[in-house]
Length: 614
Image (cartoon, rainbow, N blue to C red; front, side):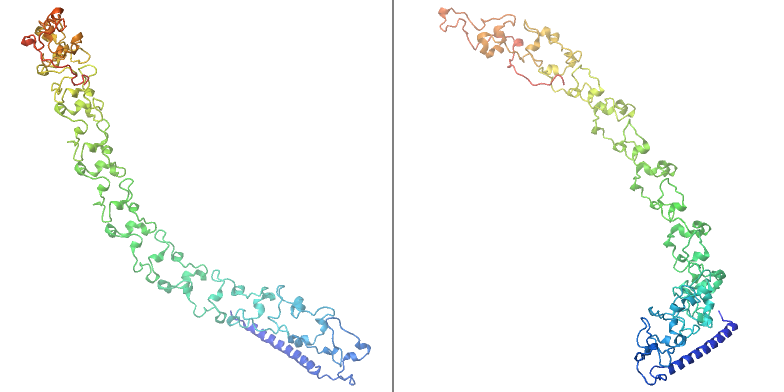
């Protein structure tokens, strides 16, 4: 801003007028003080008193005294030449000069009232041309004259350059001065520029008018380099709008590549839009394998880089339902071959190794594929689920099941088809309801109470008997042990039906008369094996031979009679020196018996045997 010639002429004229007024006032003041100084004043009207105080004269004119606080000797303010001529020296030297030195005291001082403040506004406030808030005159004016101004304050805006020669009221229109004393800024006169900038002094100095200040650096706001250093200011600051100019790439260039805003991650103004040196795609996504062979646009359609996925399924559809982590099985080198280790989930062995993947993973669904046999093959054999107990992945046949771990297959059992015991191959159950007892599968032909088949039979055939000896007290000798059980037990019901009596077979062989129940005295081993115990007979009670020589008492043999004379003879008492009416003739004598009737007598005993319930 440059001052016009008219304004400069008016300013020079005003300065000349002010200087003339100041010269007149100064002359009057100098004359007054040079002539009326107290130390040189001559009391021309009172020569006889000389320097005596005024109060030494008792005339009525000297009786007047001023009110507080203006008391004291008259000569402090007055001279002997006239009451109206004063020579008081103020403490503030500025009041001893200029117009203040020649005006009457009463213009500022009132008797009986305190001395006024030395501040200009105490007297001149109502005459101030400035706004009501401006009270302090001294910072700008001198006491000589209003128009004689002081030097510009240090914190005042520079008045150099375009401000030189500008009058105060060109900026302080209407005499308005900031009430708080704050310095005015450029925008107070020039307003906001460049779209709202207010700190003009950041770039300008009044001494250089509107030229930028020396050393001004654009880098304080935005570093100009590369292509930015080659363009005109107006390309970034349209219509001179500097305020709000963006300092980020997207502020001028907008978001690119589908929404990316951090242009500096890939570009450098010194290289234009070419990627900056050292830019590494791996910072976002590592390119390797097949990814190195594709064009950028195949992943970044229409140069849209923002939001480009970094996981496989972002570009490649999920092939295997619910399995989004492709990297667990594949590499960027290609989908085939897979790096998946099937053994981590399910070992592929035997027949499984010959199957195509789709056999177990229909429609390419790998998630949730079962890892147990029944998951694919279902429950078999009536509810069995632990297929691995009997089969291997080599095939269902042959089975590895060891039947002896459950039931030993020997003899006839080993020749039977599985379905004979497990109808329809339902191995979870069998015809015996899960029992391994013979009776669970085979109905017993021996009536109630006989259920332990293994006591007599072997799994080879029913006729292959293993009975070591006849159960109970009846022992079979050699004659009977090789004979069929039906010989004595025609119905084979060993408990329910009574056995066939011996006499049914041996009636014609009975050598004696009387008892017919052979088993009471004989055993089935041989006829000579007796087990009869004779009842007590009086004095014969202690005769052990009573059970040995049946024919002594029962000759014939006829057990229906008793013959004592075979041992005793009758002797009359008179001829019997022993006193025994029936003495034994010879204790060593036995009646001869036919060979077929001779018995090898055995004492009665309890023989161990097999329980007939077995």
